[in-house]
Image (tube, rainbow, N blue to C red; front, side, top):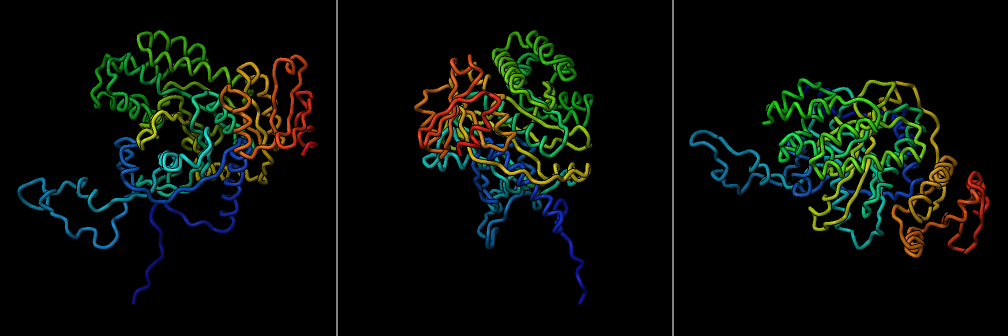
Length: 463
């Protein structure tokens, strides 16, 4: 009897004890940052119904789904004549046949299952609902450096709010995570509405998916190959001539948006996207993000469900693909019967982060999170004033989040009570004039005022 040489499928890996410890450090660090920003952990099954997954990732995404053969004799009882394409031989429509034999698939990402989760458990959730999830996903991709068939994603999403403060919070999370890892990164931002406007401007509004899928490959295949693919997808030379200079546009955010306002002058959705870009970059500037943040008009992120801001993060000192990405999705829960619930999320590629940390020899001790604080949102001016305070709290390991929308205090107190948050920072124009903040224990009613730079010390003393 021959001895079989042990092996595992390509694109998967075993992990030795040291590697497991290093990976756990990554998960613990990212989890602690998510918790610091007020996100709660959930989990979903490794497999989902194919009806949940198909059609959510675009044509190329559907091809990369791992399908699970129905249990038992999956092929029994099938009338093969229904799937015959030719008169002779065994020529079958494999796509239709696979739907008869495979009703489930391994999850491709964590976002679509999360949308299904929100709709299915809507009566058990408090909105805005903030969740994080750290679990493996599977893609039938070609294995290569930094690309695996089985890998972990670390996601954070908030649903139930349209506020761009949520997008800012995701940028802050990215900035915080990679500062803790000691990895220098570049955060790239674009907006799918701008890309939709570009499709209108070049005369092919119905080809927004073709355009985004093609330009999403620009880092991998280069501008000339992207132009060739756009041509193969049916765009004219004149249309490509409109798109090409946008993809290589340089300068700061203000100069880029100024040029784009000329390009998108006739597109209301494109101009709306530029408005959102400018508002988000103003918030980023006010928040004091330490990582460089860049408007990249060639950033597309090929997933079909994105509708607003999109993000991508690149390591500056290590050659690898994006290590983090995400964006705004307005229509995803509507597919499952709950329209009108906007969401935005970010996903960290834990396996690529591991490769970066390993390559740069950076594995510092894990950092733990602390208790939770809610910063009341009394308006844009008050929120901008408190952003440095929020950063100080988080930098001191005190769990903190900003209520994303300007709302009545009662609603924000109710939100804090439902989330079991003990402390609220409530600051209006009077406190701002004194360069102070007001901290309240909403359980005991105790309330104290402190200078802006002493808030962390005060909260530490209060609990």
